[in-house]
Length: 189
Image (cartoon, rainbow, N blue to C red; front, side, top):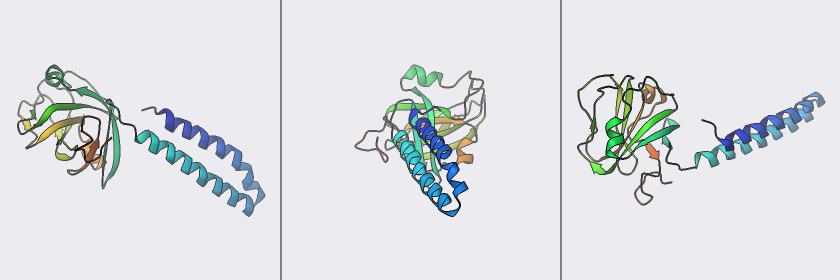
């Protein structure tokens, strides 16, 4: 995922490192100056990352919880035809990618199956506030048994199988995306 803001921050950081390296040759006072400069560069880099993380776009979701944060580039499935197709017949998917299924409103009847799906998937079920209510880990390719989300589900994020567990994504985590209305979102745009 190439973010212009973060890339620019890294370039500024690299440039600063090249400029302060000669200060180490000056002994203790040079090393102190170098550490101060590197600290300032780190703050600039973090500020650039925060600005980039603050973006709210249709093609990106960000999840947060006690475990940390994770962002995915997503394809939207927000109409019946796209939701019916989903990720069927895909042979692979980048680890930083997924598909976000968005429904018109909360429902107790949202479920998935893996017919014609070639890769294992994690399904992250979310309510209208963008709060994770259920995670189904490692759905089995071609399995035709229904995987139900439970009550009040409005969106589902599908990512590569096992990734939710590896990253530590848990129930109660919050998603940031424009699909969740500012007036009800747990983590509004």
